[in-house]
Amino acid sequence: MLKRLFDIICSLIGILLLIPFFVIIILIQIISSGFPVFYFQTRVGENNIDFKLFKFRTMNLNADKHGLLTVGGRDPRVTKLGYYLRKYKLDELPQLFNVLFGTMSLVGPRPEVRKYVDMYNSLQINVLSVKPGITDYASIEFINENEMLAQSNEPEKTYINDIMPKKLALNLKYIKDQNLMVDLKIITKTILKIAK
Picture 1: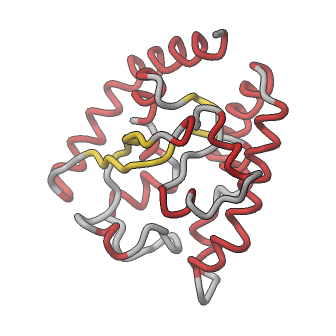
Picture 2: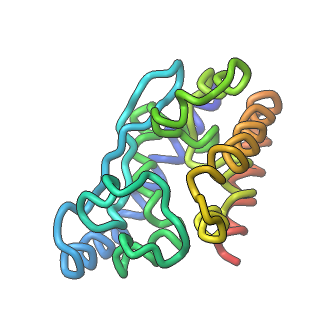
């Protein structure tokens, strides 16, 4: 209950403060690569229920048909503006609306697409026992995931076999440790990591 209240207050304040910034991003997006401005992707949330995750669009239209993973900082599917939005995690800001509407939390396991969730084992599936979040331990640890995948000859295989299990282990650690102080620490570490 306290976590939900914290999410509502923080997401509402964040949205109100960021409205001018949202408008600037939207205008640049329209001028540079047209519509749509936002990207809605189906992800798997709490209790294994699908929901629509909000983002600023950072790729060319229909780019997800050519793969779900983004590889490298200069993936050719990513727009010029999208590169900077991704670099500073600004494309994630519309997820404050997900938090406000209750499909996400500020802190929690990052939501995955169904394709990869279907690969979870009986222990890993427990990450779906809580609301997914905008940031978590794994977001901090794997902040340069795209660059890591770019170094692999088989990015998807590397993600499934190496990265995903480590992220899920961190997700399970968060579920075990979670409280408001842990959330505040993760939010602070995330901001500091992005600002580097």
